[in-house]
Image (cartoon, rainbow, N blue to C red; front, side, top):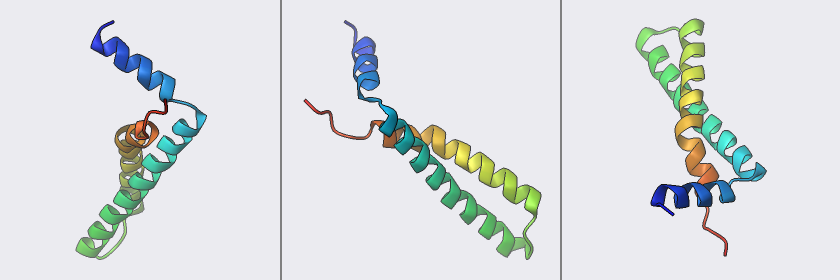
Amino acid sequence: MTVSALARQTLFARLDGRGIRRGLAAGAAWGLFVGAGLVFIEARRCGVICLDDAAITLILSMAGGIASMGPLAAFGRPVQS
């Protein structure tokens, strides 16, 4: 087997329902905190919260968190032998 086939086999063997839920929850939480921080920074700079910009920032940061931090949380546990 090649290295990529071994990696796929071990990753898919380690992914279960709890891992998927953990990845979605961790990615969404990370995105929510980062998005809220960015909205807060923008509100301090402008003096007012623009709801359109806040919604887009939160949605994009949550999507980015799920795409980047989600797999780290889902697969980031030790292999059980």
